[in-house]
Length: 254
Image (cartoon, rainbow, N blue to C red; front, side, top):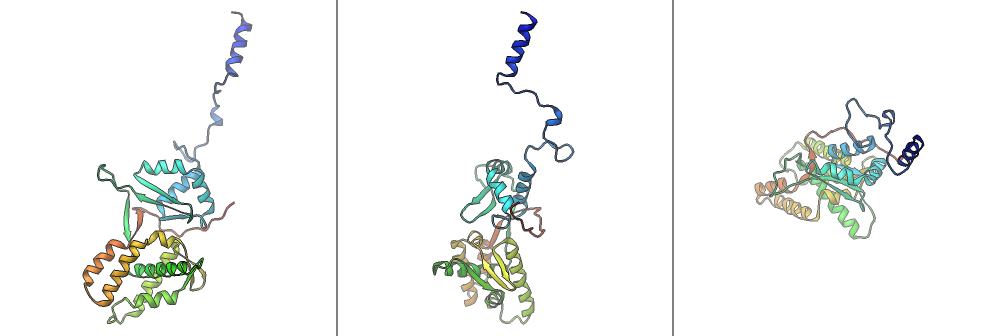
């Protein structure tokens, strides 16, 4: 074989479908010293947000929602590695996580159930009731005033308790938390639109159970049993044990 033959063969190898080595300077840059991760920065941020926060909302976090949909399979796979389900509700534009639970498999629990407070539960029941009523009447949206929420919730507190101001603060705090979660959105001062997220947070079955609990308390019968029932059905969605409590940042598409 001549030198000319060797040169010709080498050219064929280089053009025959083999992947040429990539120079070190052309490798993807590390995001931080010692980084061995393979996901792009935007995908990692979506993954972290899903673990930190209860929900990812399409209308609030447009850019991250788009990133999630474009990379749903890999994000879902990473969560599965942690025994966590990813739920993406395309119709409502909501994504959230669920702890994997299995009787056949020893599953370490990463997420915990964080129950709503009594005030939050009372406000949720009213929001879900209003949402269900307005949708049943053919309305496309449901709205409530904070005074309406406050007045309704106060009827379920002990009438002999004269510390009304403390209960009002509890209810206002509950409203603020539910607004932060995206269950309601403030359109003007004290005026809120109820979002479809309320259907995810409080299913029809839970709503029925909570109404029974409230009725039992109102009738003064079986209060202890009713309180126990409320603890069981008023749990919030799974939350990361070390979840970030920072306020959500508004995001828009770039």
